Length: 335
Length: 260
Image (cartoon, rainbow over all chains, first blue to last red):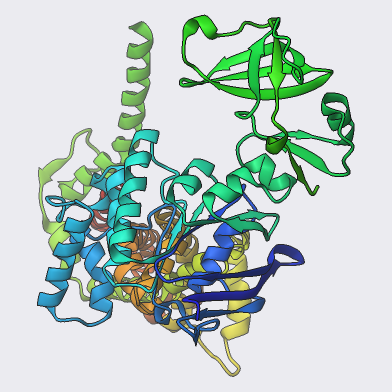
């Protein structure tokens, strides 16, 4: 039996479908990410799972128990909000203790659990601080500790890292993952950041226009996009229509061909190896360890990502090159 | 430099112009006699002691306090949960509420008094001449101040997510409101109560037309004492002024604290 079963979830507001036909199962301790662009319905789906928004249709079971209509207080679900939603009138300790006090636990038990939670998120020394006096990263950790201390069955994280700068985001991402692994906590993480999804998740559910369009491991979703929407969202794929495929590769296909920018290899313009395609560099962009080239080959625009090894290897606009695309790197996908 | 001096000059002139009548009234209320001379004759607290020993004045003061505090109690009980419910459950209503609360100001008090007089003079609910009708009228006056200030306070604290977070931690809605939302509203509520009180304490038209001497409030008393000694009424005006000034100052301090 699956730990979490979601079947037939649907929600609409005044005729506008937010999401529909949402089905998935989760194993205990699994870390799943709902990934998709803004407005695809992922945050509303999370709020429905938490019981904060009512469903139009569907069933939600946790450990076999049907909690579709249970109030948020009775679901055993913890949630970290995008804005953290820390209680501004309470100190760090009081915020973390709030859920325990609602369970009417003895003061000694509350104090010991709060101390453990503070240690878990490495906030020692900040017990008496108010949220207004904390940095974004510290607030995020208080929100995490507050959700974890009540020992929820499922943890929901609604874009908890989006308001933080890149360095803190990376370190907190790892911290969240460590805590999740240590507690073996079933977690659903919502984000629009593919890097976050790829680094954190056991499985990724890609959402587009209110539907889960693909679910699978990070590797599968990144290398084998199920359709055009996933390919566009993951990894800056080159998407070639039927006419472009014929022009560039001489292939007759009905749908689209997806080619990852990092699988296209560049060779010198005078290389005569059979199967190479002549191209011209139109524009280059240095992204640190990667150089992104926009090239034109047989009238088709392509994007190519190369490792930035040596300054001498960098190509300039107008340079002529040869391209190689291995047949196994071509993916035909549904529109 | 010259511009700054000019601006300072204008401000000082304005302060003098505004302070002059108050200062004149204060000196008049403290003088034994001030009629045919440029400067007053003798300083005395006689007018103040006469005023503060006058039973009728104390009763009017008490009536004003009862009506104002009663109104504010009623307003707090009704408006605070209403503002919370609107912001948490029906946020779209806020736009309509902002129009609705201004409606009482669209009708001049004299006009609405005439309507209220004919409605509540007799019949099933006869309220004219009782403080109850003032409670109702004053509620509509306090409503815009309280609604707007509380609404602003709630907007700052992101009610929805705070209550949702409290729900997920096991709190009921009333508990979430009491433990999480109300502390955030405290300063906004206090400031709006002080401002409303200052406003209501000086209300005259409704009090005079709907209740008059049957439940004499401070403003009606002041009006009825217009033929008494000028020194006495000056002491009355100054007492009233100092009282409302202190309240307004407290309200300003509280709202400044809230902003910081």
